[in-house]
Image (cartoon, rainbow, N blue to C red; front, side, top):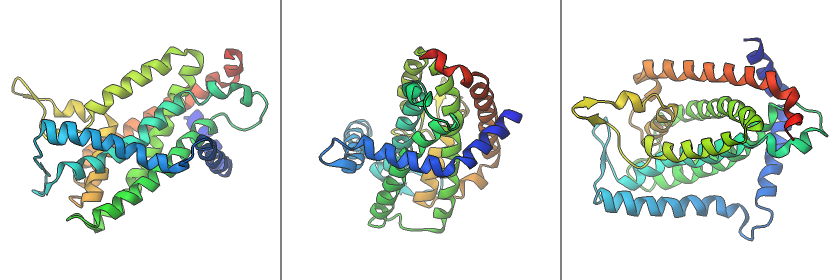
Length: 276
């Protein structure tokens, strides 16, 4: 618990530094591209087009998705409202995992909390995420799913996503600094998560030999976040209220992850330079 409090204090005291470093991270990432930050919109659009052709047209034959409130949502709209979460968490997890060991030389010359390193990498991707969410919101205004009161729960799910990424980033960045193979494991797990999370296929009921195994999919915290974003943008329900037990599970899991990540990070960070 003491480790968790220490990490939270470091995040608060370094918040301005995290914002500055994240802005520099974005600038340096697009420095050599002619189209600059436009690629942050083009890449998701290209991926969405491919997924829509394969899964929306090829697999589903253009059928719409029936939501829990009975609304019929075109597959492309349903997919977009979930994939904006994936376009945030996928690069954020991957890059925060290697954020410390890829900057060890810089760390040895500067004095700021190492726990701020995964944070500013995540925050850099959060700026792009906000831009994508804004684009999707504008797009939805030209469909049947216009602005609604359910948008008010969107900041809650954004906060939950940020805390999830920080907790996971503390764990994976610490482990990957000591054991480089962790980066490869994380990449493999992320490839699996694309298909184990309701991003490109609807998982209202997952049955195997007559057994409903949907609860196994819901153990994945990304399930909660993706469905929460969808409920907000499509205006279906107050997701965190309707699924109160799932909400409690999600935050209990995040608390344990954050406590574990804080303990690991503080225990080993004084020896990070030894792994250079």
